[in-house]
Length: 85
Image 1: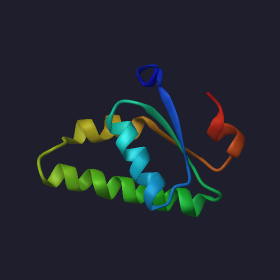
Image 2: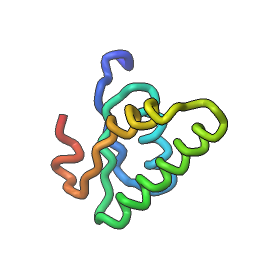
Image 3: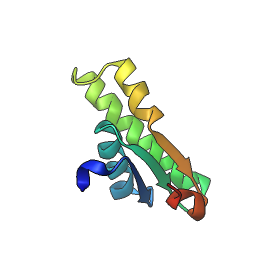
Image 4: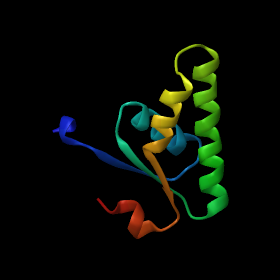
């Protein structure tokens, strides 16, 4: 069932993939964020961090919560690693 899901992969770190990664990580899931090169993954993580900072500015999240969420996201450019687990 959906409740049994613990790990997800977002295969693409663009606007949609990074948004999904943020959503899943905020829900407590371990996330692998994949894209074809380091620059794309870095851009995706920057979008995620910007989103989290917005939540912080609006009083929704604390620094500690942000660190927990970021700790759930693993980035990779290796397609095999991305789909492992």
